[in-house]
Image (cartoon, rainbow, N blue to C red; front, side, top):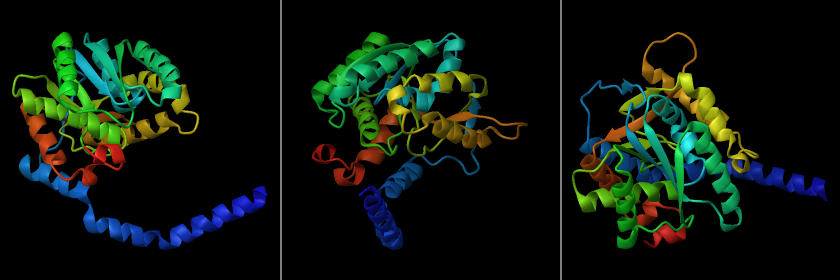
Length: 286
């Protein structure tokens, strides 16, 4: 029976591989994300030849990390957080969701452990995975969090990151920035699944071990995928943005913008039909 099942799976994969080119071509016909990225680049085009600015981790700042799920903080920005904390910055991670109901307790324990390993504080907002609201009440809650912590910098996923909850958190922050206008914190958009349009790159070579250790705290998420391998591989590739340097480097890349400019970025990316932004039915509905 097992052999028959494996044979059927193998045949299915072969058939899929033979016809997958058609799906690729069909997908290329739309590419709504590419259109959104084009709008961002057209609306906020840097001078030709501008390269990302190499920066050290922020020093002596109050920093808030919006992590859609426990592990996004370590995968996306763990090296920069470790460096910033070593340089005297105060960091708090707000976990927006805690995963599926049956795993919340475990994932919250892992999130606490990861933050403790970095030296960061943590809190859990406990919004529903796959159903993060962006209505007036949700915006008020986020505004209250910002008033309480008064961060100089907020980290959130880049609005085109390839996960519905990540995009939703970016939308949540963007809607608040649009509503409340100028005067908010600087926003550092990080990447987990997708790419980012980087204008800042942080050398995290001294904190690679700290990042790896923080990711390892999320045991439930690392049994089937080696997230440290994926994340640090991306960071190794991003180190090319640091310029010429001997040896193997690691870097985290960000799109950094003032509060009002982040509102404009989020609007450019997210002001389009919801079926072009999200895959899940709940978010597509509004």
